Image (tube, rainbow, N blue to C red; front, side, top):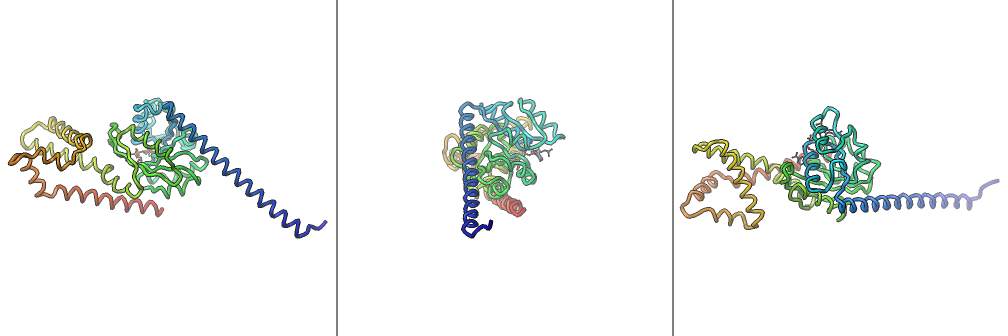
Length: 318
Ligand SMILES: NC(=O)c1ccc[n+]([C@@H]2O[C@H](COP(=O)([O-])OP(=O)(O)OC[C@H]3O[C@@H](n4cnc5c(N)ncnc54)[C@H](OP(=O)(O)O)[C@@H]3O)[C@@H](O)[C@H]2O)c1
C-alpha cells in the first residue's frame, strides 16, 4: 500500500508533537526536581541540618565545615568531602569533625543538597564534568573562575553562586562576598549568606566587584600582617620585648578594626581623636605621610586587582 503525501505530512506533525511533549515532560521534570530541592534545603535550613558536599577538602573547605558546625547549620555526619588518597591531612581533619571523605567527586555530588566547589582553580575544569547529572546549588570559592565559565561547564539551569571568602574565615572572622549566577534566586542567595555569615561578615556584590574585593579582603590580611610585623619591629627597636610587641601589635589592629566596624565612625575622625596637638601620634602620622603610606596601600590594592583581572581573563580563555 502506498503512503500518500497527506499521511506523510501527518506522520511528520505527529513526530514533532511527540518531540514537543517529551521536551515539555523534561522541562516539567527539571522544575519538579528544582522545587523538591528548594523545599528540602528550606526545611534543612529550618532544622539546621544542611547536607553539604565539599568538592575538594583542603584548608578552606575544612575552615568552612568547622564554621558551619559551630554556627549550628550542619553536623559532621551531614557533610561529605572529596580528597585525594594521599591527602591524609585533609582526610584526618574531616574525620575529626565527624565527616566522611571519599576519593572521587561523584558521591559528594550525590550526597549534598549544597555543593561547595573548593578545589584549586586549575582543577575546576576537571571537576565540572563530574557534576553533569546534577542540578544542585553550587557555591564556588575558586578564585578567578567566572560565573559564565562555571555555568558553561554545568547542566543548563544549575544555580551557581560565586563566593570569595578570606583566610580569617579559619577563625570565624572572615570577610566574604558573593555574586549570583543567572539561575540563582533569592532563596539560593539567602543560603549562601547564611552559610558564609557563619564564618564572619558576608555581603552580596556584583560579579565585576569580585576582583577589587579579592585585592582588598583576600590579599588584605597579608598587608596587615606586614604592618603588624613592622609595628612590632619598631617597638623592639625602641627596647620592647618581641613577644609582647607582637601581642600588642595584633591586639591594636584588632581593636582599631573593631572600632571602625562597631562604632561606624569615619576612620579619619577616629584618627583625629587620637592625635592631640603637638603630641606623639601626630608626629608619627607626619612620618607615615612623608613616606607615602596611604599611597602605597592604595597602590597595592590597585596592583592586586589588576593581577586578579589578568588571572581571571586567562582562566576564561581556557
Ligand atoms: N585559602 C584562601 O585564602 C582562599 C580564599 C578564597 C578562595 N580560595 C579558593 O578556595 C579554593 C581552595 O583553596 P585552599 O586554600 O583550600 O586550597 P587547598 O588546601 O589546596 O584545597 C584544595 C583541595 O582539593 C584537593 N583536590 C585536588 N584535586 C582534586 C580533585 N580532582 N577532586 C577533589 N579534590 C581535589 C586538593 O588535594 P591535594 O592537596 O592533594 O592536591 C586539596 O585538598 C581555591 O580555589 C582557592 O582559589 C582560597
